[in-house]
Length: 542
Image 1 (cartoon, rainbow, N blue to C red):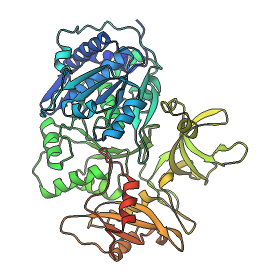
Image 2 (cartoon, rainbow, N blue to C red; image 1 turned 180 degrees about the vertical axis):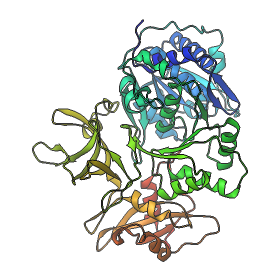
Image 3 (cartoon, one colour; image 1 turned 90 degrees about the vertical axis):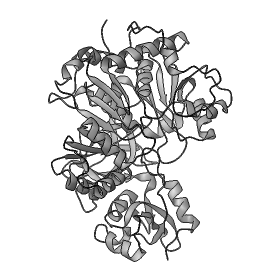
Image 4 (cartoon, helix red, strand yellow; image 1 turned 180 degrees about the horizontal axis):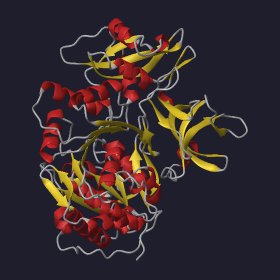
């Protein structure tokens, strides 16, 4: 049977190549490639017996665990569609995603059973519970291990296709979650490296080549975000499709000391984080515990999905002088959009500079004019955009799809929402999310750039920059800051540090000190909540 660029087909070929190799580690739970393959087959047979088939949507309402990736792969084997469900959702949000995603089945940790039981009637006909240390009432919901028991381990499923869909639900920083519809082949090339992430020959051109990209010695990689977040899910798939070992964080929060304990124990080679929110506790643990761990196995620390400031990158280099630090750009809609080259172009530093390619460019929106969209000329600003292997839209949302996926000169382009500039040398400088741009007296200010400057102050633990009303300039640059324990911070001291790194008009005019910066579980900022804290006036520093 011919193979497709389908994640199940690709994984099965890798599993056949290295069956005894360690595939997954999550706390005490471990699985080889053969065990992962067989357990995924068993669960696929269980789901099929419950009527789950091609195109059906299966919710994964789970903390990090091996069962997450097992059930995900089981869905792919059936051409069903796994749906990531945020485990921090409250009742209204949970009801929304169950309805919007058209779930027919949900795999959940036991503690979430009461929340599910309280939802309005939906199309969900099958629930399966993964045991945890809670004692939540389950009713007649079967246990995951009981569901696997007696099921065949054989791989006897029908053929799959390149364009089978995977949906990644993303909340971004505002609004209800949106389901990004990725055909498997497009996702494989745009987000997972096309099988060429660890190989000098680059992406494969035929599915059957994937097994040949498996190296003799596996890279042990750990992703710190929850699997429900695209950055962790993609990294796990990149590792599995390369025959490497995936280490998951089994804890429900990020504790720096616990992470370094795992890194030392599992001899992790590559550590992937989501920006400064994850970098901070890791760096603080290293600073508080000099020489406690043997971390010589690490050769790469990478970040994606949120701002990874230069100050935090430099701090990691102090602890790991021989380590390769990477800062990637991308989103749930775009996949990987390249790595910061380390060279900041132009007068405005932005967040980083990446290489333009045939499929990555800057698109200018000339709203209201004929031929509304065009590719930027050198020196022109627009929206960071991708073509080629891109999603096909948002599930159940034609309006957002039309706003995000546009045609330029007869070619489909995805607009990421990040403001960018095409430099004279053909590279692209990325500034940050356009929807968060602050207009103060006609000057454009991108919060992420200011945040990076503020984090160089030793008292700043974490921060977000938002706009608040200003009678003269319309909007004022406002810093919402969490300081380090035992530290003090004044507006004047923060401004003095900021002026060393950004132009005067970007320097915050207000300072609000809060106990904790609002962030999603993935580490992404929640700007509306930060702005709400500032507007309350409760935390204002005079």
